[in-house]
Image (spheres, rainbow, N blue to C red):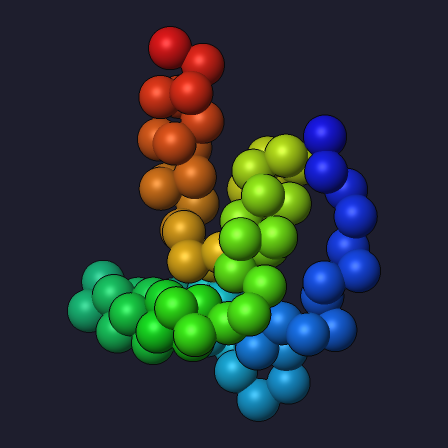
Length: 84
């Protein structure tokens, strides 16, 4: 299990973009969620620690947010494929 978080200060999701990676506390329409996720994933695509972030989220089975370019659902599907 990779619980090392030393990569986090380098992650591009911190700071001004952090609101993209987790749903708002108010209701979010499907089209709003899809736009937010697309924008978050675009940040992940150029992030120098995307692999570390994804590995961390998968190892701790993070249930919320976009980590390493994957949504909660995408991570669950990836974990299911690995265990099958």
